Image (cartoon, rainbow, N blue to C red; front, top):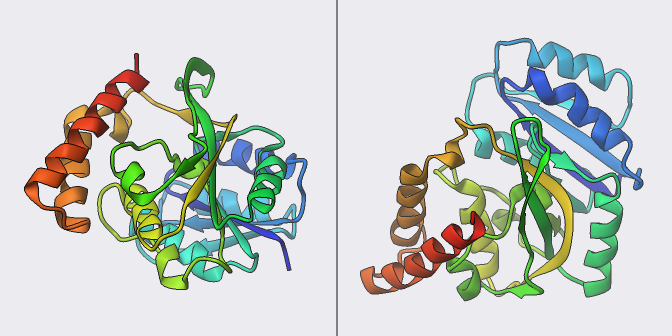
Length: 249
């Protein structure tokens, strides 16, 4: 069995997919499986993924019968995993060559269930812009409510220490943040490795670049997902907004 399972949702990612797979194949840590969940792209991504899987027995392709979004695709991959440790990677993001090795060593050193790393914002070519989000040493549920410093592509989870149901992402906007909160709400602490091991590619028209939509998504998480009252929601939201602005300066 592989030690680490890497889940990649693939939707119209033909432009990036080959580089993404090669990036994983050159990781200094080699005991992994790569689960490509093709989400009914209809653009040739499935055929490309299947061709890439033929080059390495550690690569598996799961074809979704219909497009269901990133959360459902990740959940499909999570359910199919064989490794104890679970990592997520989006097809257009970048890992440093020693990302898995360093993060797994950190997780074991901390005897943690949940770890994440620092990351750098990249441009459309994934070239670093110099804007870095530093991972705090530790993050509890209450601390996480006021900041979104956990980037999906930097996360690693020990599935033997986290209840199975908490590993699955709710099918809502900002499903990744909602997932980190539901894990932390259970009493688990996330530990941060303050080293840039990933680059977050940010195309000009990316979903997260729409600040208005981001505000609505986070507010809805407080009110609908976490069921916080109006005062608590406003309190956490103010700190979230302040940190979001400072992160981009």
